[in-house]
Structures are given as structure tokens and as C-alpha cells.
Length: 74
Image (cartoon, rainbow, N blue to C red; front, side):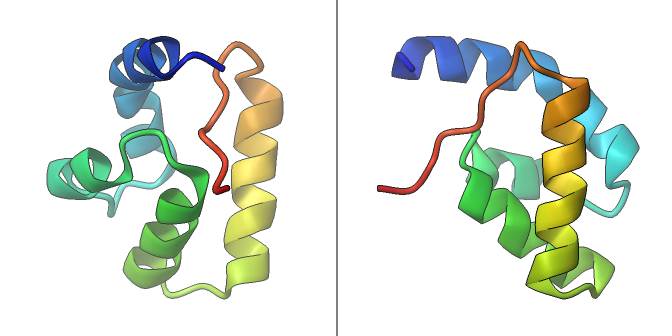
């Protein structure tokens, strides 16, 4: 996916992420910037859950928000 499109979608999605994972801060979201692995790490850290659970939650979030695609690690 085009990086500009990811960035534009990211700005729209920040509010939804804060609703889902309320312990994420604006600074966390700035660091994450649409990157899935960064999101997983911050969710684990802020919510005290294991990576598998964070991955499950993010996968469910992605299923509910199909127009948004996280940037995958290379």
C-alpha cells in the first residue's frame, strides 16, 4: 500500500485506536504511525498482555476496520 495512503488513514484511525486501547497515549500513537509491530508492542506494554493476545486483538480490530491496513514489517 502507498505510504501516503497509510499516513492519511492513520490520522483518521487514531481516535478508534484510543477507544479500543485506552491506555495508549498520543505519544504512543505518534511512535506507532501505522506500523502493526509497533502497535503490538505498545499494546503489550501499556495493557500488560502477551504478544499473542495483542495480535489477536489487533486482528479483530483489523477485521472490523477493513478499509485501514497497517504497515507490515519487512
